[in-house]
Amino acid sequence: MSARLLRNATLVLGFAFLYGPIAILTAMSFNASRLVTVWGGFSTKWYAALAHDERMLQAAGVSLSAAALSALIATVNGVLAAVALARFRAFRGRSLFAGALYAPLVLPEVVFGLGLLLVFVALDVERGFVTLVLAHAAFTMCFATVMIHAALKDCDPTLEEAAADLGATPFRAFLLVTLPLIAPSVVSAYLLAFTLSLDDFVIASFTTGPGATTLPMRIYSQVRLGVSPEVNAISTLLLGFVALILTASALLTRGRAKGGGAG
Image 1 (spheres, helix red, strand yellow):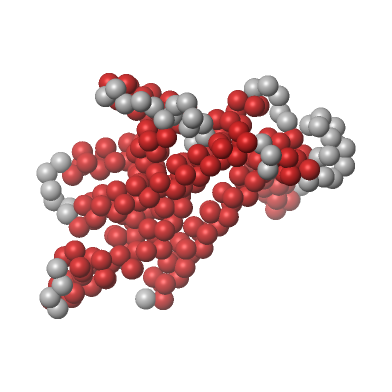
Image 2: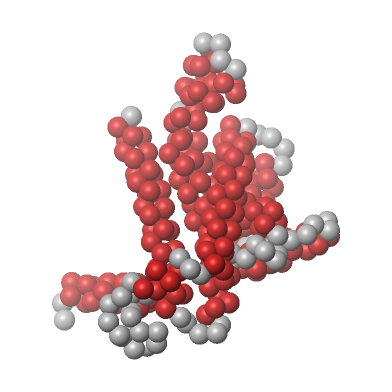
């Protein structure tokens, strides 16, 4: 067997291992049979059945609302943190500040979720939608900061200096000069934070409460009783939604890279 054939075979096996389960799940969501292991023909009836599943729709609404709000908070905080790291490089405690920001990147989610739970209990905060949003904002902020910080490091600071020479205040120079330049990365950071929040199960399990069940939690609770075709259908819809967001984020990042290369 030639080296090229072996390489291609390894590549195919790797992709099959990674995406085979997703392909099977997507195909079974169109299965007319209620039995998930028996193919009963092509049908979209399980997607139509989702429209009448109140609990699943409510969980999807909670997940989308929490993801939108937490991503907004994480992105705003990420911009502020990235500006502090990129523009104020010599302040005392910078290393500790950066370490605290990036710690959730490597911290096990179960530890992070448990820590947040203890904080909410210590503060006597009732768990629900608000605590879910705050927890997801804290968790996704580090990812937003990494993306925005990288964009700021590539942004020429002399442009802000030129605006300051023309009379602009630091805030106005950042708002009118720097922010438009890093806007694609800011939008990408928001989309990434939105996706991470939408997909999260572990942290949500620790920090949410009655009436604020997220979609991953609802799916997990139903899967414990057996995989149903409705679960396959909602999982496929969730997969397609996340794929669209990641594609939009990739296109924005690619456009920024091309713009930077052209400049």
